[in-house]
Image (cartoon, rainbow, N blue to C red):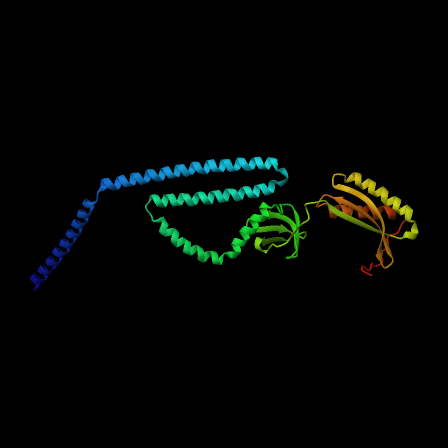
Length: 304
């Protein structure tokens, strides 16, 4: 019984050794059948080609970036007033150049490695159609943003009003996909470009300021006019860098409900209208009260 068991173990061991020897022999035959000279030749050829492609695209990127930067630097000097717009278009141009260059670089590498680029592009085209159908809003953002920038409809720092959205404020960023603006109360709005239909730009011309100071005409109209005129002359000298035209003394206007006011009109640099309106009104009130004139405080009924 012991002898039979020993013979069975020896037979199993022999079979395992024979199978391992056969597998090792098969690998040796496969290894020896490889044309290593051809393999190394292909690797060297492909490697040299890839290195040449890397160097070529590196030089193209450097030269292209240099030319684009030089071109926009000259435009910034010529269009100092529109430096923000030029900078936006500059960034957009660099992005388009980089993405285009990367596409051709990737195509060259795949083609060098022998990967069927045509089949990949066909598959990508089908996927692109599906993605495009779901990205119509994004495409509209890009197209609208492009025309907003190219037509110089708004610039960073402009005070604008989006009529349809009932939003107004100062533009803080003009992007190819989104507009960012800040309202007077500090609220920051992020508006996709596709939602922008009507833009009212309040920063492209000098702004009109109307200052009405309520008076009691029977207290001495001529004296009041004289004091307001003196105040206008003083303030026009103080804010001469911010006042484009005026101040012009329009005269007395009827506010309704037996209320009368002296109106002054002036045109000021955009963004300064609220500050100067407050400065003129405060100066009028202070001057009239110091000279013994009263400022009516009864309610004004507009439209009656």
